[in-house]
Amino acid sequence: MKFKHTVQVFIDNFSVTYKQLLYRLVILLVAAGLYAAVCIPFINSLTGSPDYVSLISGIKAFVNNFLEGKISEIGEASAQIKHAFDALLRLVAENREQIAWGIVGCVAIYLVQKFFEGLGNYATTAVINDKMALHANSPFMVTLLHNFKSAALYSLIYSPISFIYDALCWLGMYFVIFRLLSLILVPLPIQIFLYVTAIIVIATVKMTFTSDWMPALIRGKMKQKEAFLYTFDRRRKQSFNVFSNYVVLVLIIFAVNVGGALCTFGAALLITVPSSYVILVCFECVNYFDREELKYFIDKYTIIKPEKERTVTREEFFKGEQ
Image (tube, rainbow, N blue to C red; front, side):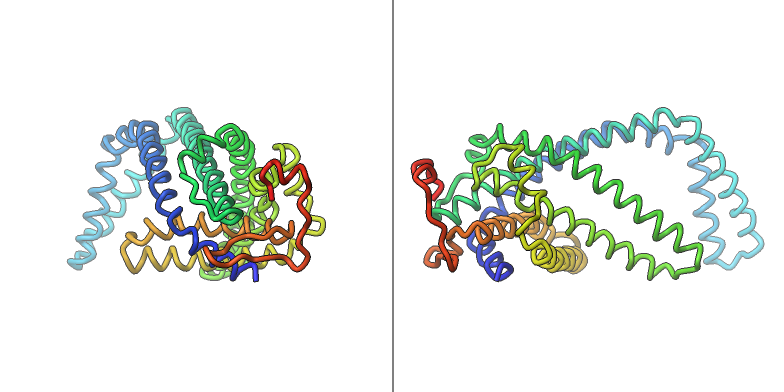
């Protein structure tokens, strides 16, 4: 039922997708400008070098000679490519320090980007919570500003934890699958299949353990430390059920985004990418409401009530948490 209710809540809150789209586009444009400022100077120095020019001309000569059937001249083009590539590698090695600082700069920009995206996800959760609890249409930016302090602290904690987890797991799986398995001659298609499967499992495990974080802050009115400990404490939270639902959602999201990108030359991503974040937030909220036995709207005329509705305390009533 969680999956069904998630889809219904998503449909009822579909307008949030457009707000997410505009918010993320602004972040993406600013981040792209910063990435360009860090990377373009080095790229220009690399592409402007004689070795790079020689490499490109060698590749063009190799392709042309191959297509024209000039077998005798292919060897000369191959030697030019090898010589130019070796020289280009030496140029890169001579600029290790500049490359290292560039990587540090890109990681810093990425973390800042994820911080602001986290603010947007927090605002999305708050808007959907208001719709589920009261069927109120809360303004996105007003909600973000109203919850800015809590959202900023949440994103400041979550973003680096998520980055470190993803980086370690992705690199670890890359080493195991593409390095170790290649030693026992596992075919490349199987390696790719295993890596994609591993990434999906890694993502769903992370979402399973953090799914209660934002709802606990927003709906549960918890403090940051309390919500942090609450989300990682999986006792009586049906973790396997949450995990299995996330697997289905992630597979659907992956298929829709890849299919949309291929069939519409990327145009569908304008809708499918922000929708992916919104439907994941909807699941987080539905999962939290169900577990806490709270009633909620899935549309204007339908309220989902738990089998045993929890009695609202006097404090919760006057704080507006009913």
